[in-house]
Length: 98
Image (cartoon, helix red, strand yellow):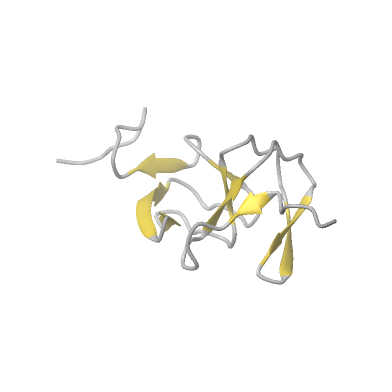
Protein backbone atom coordinates (compact mmCIF):
# COMPACT_ATOMS: atom_id res chain seq x y z
CA UNK A 1 0.00 0.00 0.00
CA UNK A 2 1.35 3.42 -0.89
CA UNK A 3 0.88 6.49 1.25
CA UNK A 4 -0.43 9.75 -0.14
CA UNK A 5 2.21 12.51 -0.14
CA UNK A 6 1.87 15.08 2.67
CA UNK A 7 1.94 17.99 0.19
CA UNK A 8 0.25 18.89 -3.06
CA UNK A 9 1.69 20.76 -6.05
CA UNK A 10 -1.21 22.55 -7.78
CA UNK A 11 0.68 23.63 -10.94
CA UNK A 12 4.22 22.84 -12.15
CA UNK A 13 5.28 26.51 -12.11
CA UNK A 14 4.18 27.04 -8.47
CA UNK A 15 6.88 27.95 -5.97
CA UNK A 16 4.74 26.76 -3.05
CA UNK A 17 3.33 23.39 -2.01
CA UNK A 18 0.09 22.88 -0.07
CA UNK A 19 0.02 20.84 3.14
CA UNK A 20 -2.63 18.09 2.96
CA UNK A 21 -2.19 17.38 6.69
CA UNK A 22 -0.70 19.20 9.66
CA UNK A 23 3.07 19.00 9.11
CA UNK A 24 5.69 19.11 11.86
CA UNK A 25 8.81 21.25 12.02
CA UNK A 26 11.75 19.21 10.76
CA UNK A 27 9.54 16.87 8.74
CA UNK A 28 10.84 16.01 5.29
CA UNK A 29 8.42 16.26 2.36
CA UNK A 30 8.98 15.16 -1.24
CA UNK A 31 9.06 17.56 -4.17
CA UNK A 32 9.88 16.48 -7.72
CA UNK A 33 12.41 13.83 -6.71
CA UNK A 34 14.05 15.87 -3.95
CA UNK A 35 13.38 16.35 -0.26
CA UNK A 36 12.48 19.55 1.57
CA UNK A 37 12.94 19.81 5.35
CA UNK A 38 10.29 22.00 6.99
CA UNK A 39 11.67 24.92 8.97
CA UNK A 40 8.53 25.16 11.14
CA UNK A 41 5.16 23.48 11.48
CA UNK A 42 2.79 24.04 8.57
CA UNK A 43 -0.95 23.67 9.24
CA UNK A 44 -3.30 21.72 6.98
CA UNK A 45 -4.15 23.69 3.84
CA UNK A 46 -1.30 26.19 4.25
CA UNK A 47 1.59 26.87 1.89
CA UNK A 48 5.30 26.12 2.17
CA UNK A 49 8.07 27.33 -0.11
CA UNK A 50 9.43 24.84 -2.66
CA UNK A 51 12.46 27.02 -3.38
CA UNK A 52 13.90 30.17 -1.80
CA UNK A 53 11.76 33.22 -2.59
CA UNK A 54 13.57 36.57 -2.34
CA UNK A 55 12.05 39.56 -0.54
CA UNK A 56 9.69 41.18 -3.04
CA UNK A 57 9.55 37.99 -5.12
CA UNK A 58 6.23 36.73 -6.40
CA UNK A 59 4.54 33.81 -4.68
CA UNK A 60 3.03 31.55 -7.36
CA UNK A 61 0.04 29.27 -6.61
CA UNK A 62 -2.33 27.70 -9.19
CA UNK A 63 0.21 28.89 -11.78
CA UNK A 64 -0.53 32.55 -11.01
CA UNK A 65 0.97 35.16 -8.69
CA UNK A 66 -1.03 35.47 -5.46
CA UNK A 67 1.22 37.92 -3.66
CA UNK A 68 4.75 39.05 -2.87
CA UNK A 69 7.20 37.95 -0.22
CA UNK A 70 7.58 40.66 2.43
CA UNK A 71 10.95 39.15 3.42
CA UNK A 72 13.22 36.41 2.11
CA UNK A 73 11.52 33.01 2.42
CA UNK A 74 13.67 29.89 2.60
CA UNK A 75 12.75 26.56 1.02
CA UNK A 76 10.65 24.61 3.51
CA UNK A 77 9.39 27.73 5.27
CA UNK A 78 5.70 28.30 6.03
CA UNK A 79 4.28 30.94 3.65
CA UNK A 80 1.46 32.93 5.25
CA UNK A 81 0.48 36.43 6.44
CA UNK A 82 3.74 36.92 8.37
CA UNK A 83 5.82 36.84 5.16
CA UNK A 84 3.34 37.34 2.30
CA UNK A 85 1.46 40.42 1.09
CA UNK A 86 -1.61 39.41 -0.91
CA UNK A 87 -2.20 40.83 -4.37
CA UNK A 88 -5.93 40.55 -3.76
CA UNK A 89 -6.64 41.41 -0.11
CA UNK A 90 -5.35 44.15 2.15
CA UNK A 91 -2.59 42.75 4.37
CA UNK A 92 -2.27 44.36 7.82
CA UNK A 93 0.84 46.53 7.95
CA UNK A 94 1.56 46.25 4.21
CA UNK A 95 1.87 49.34 2.03
CA UNK A 96 -0.03 48.66 -1.17
CA UNK A 97 0.66 52.09 -2.67
CA UNK A 98 -1.79 54.23 -4.61
